[in-house]
Image (cartoon, rainbow, N blue to C red; front, side, top):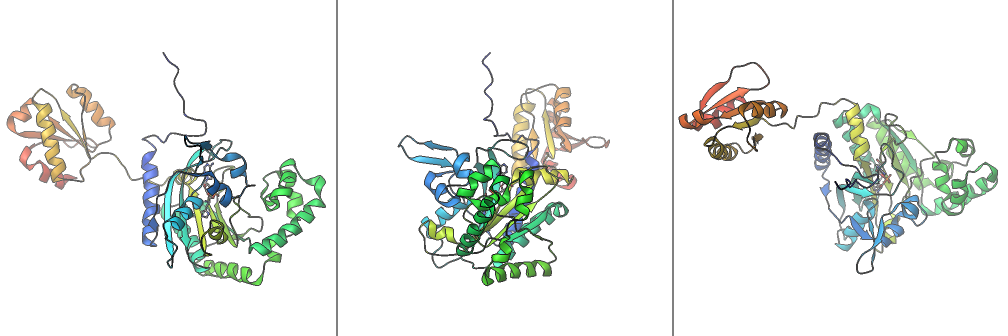
Length: 423
Ligand code: HAM
């Protein structure tokens, strides 16, 4: 026999037993988004490579080593999207959605990063992203944070996530701070690990984000950005924290929160949990006003966030929330030469009369016994049983599968009404 072909490393299958959890979480999130007036946008999974290198930043981990980039048959360099912000903005600029109008948008789908796979970190993973264009804030910054807070509340995991907040200031403020950081780390070169030495020349702010415990001491005494923010940036952050105080949403100001993508300025935030081990960031985002001009459009405002479904779903699973049962109402058993076609006809009539009826039709034949076994396994609430006798009498048997109530016989032309009553 030929050897099985296996999935690509870091790319996982989502099995039927897991999809009810996915549907539940997606449904709750979409419901909240709709209530806040956000609209769905869909854009391609593949974009020109340049879109990502220009927006995420040439010297970020994603662009330097994690992108799935290939040449297509026309010789164009294309990349599987590592995130949605760049593609969403590209689509809106290209389609004129930023002209004299604001947008509140969301998208969901697979993203691709060639990272080292581990629990909670995959090479194909699913995000829900939200982007708002045309709002200078800080009201929209607050709305997005409050909306994420409502996501967690509705999913029953509010106690397991902590909000961390920071401001990266304006580009000018960041450049000034960057120079200060470089001076500080240069004076402490012997304390830096290899990664940080490399970042010193390329992206020194990311040194603050190092997870290496040996770096903790030198990072803890580095100059803090909060002390070097301009008045406007400070006021922006303060307006958000005041609104969160009023709404009784807890947060931690984390001056070391810098994010791994280059396009941010001003507000950045992350929702983190201790429940998932090393990959504890469930949702993250921030403001990225300058990216719009960088992609060639007129100066405007932009802010957004994305959450990872694998991590969020793992949290929901840990919380033991009851996931609505996605099983069938009915398993339809039919045995005998005349019952097969008659059953199919009856089933189609039922689907017409009760369009929301979840009815699983036995396919592939089998004895009464084996069909009953399948009915039990299906978790359906009732079995409908059609044998030769029932066909001859124009009746059908209805058997409850979850309790000991005896089965009853119902006339076929009264079946739809009968089911309406018992379901
Ligand atoms: P990000 O921090 O790169 O931001 O990703 C957001 C979330 O996606 C993470 O917090 C995590 O839950 C999930 N995630 C990221 N990488 C992986 C992975 N390899 N495996 C599993 N989950 C992962 C962004 O992507 C920005 N586009 C967010 C944003 C939107 N900023 C503004 N608008």
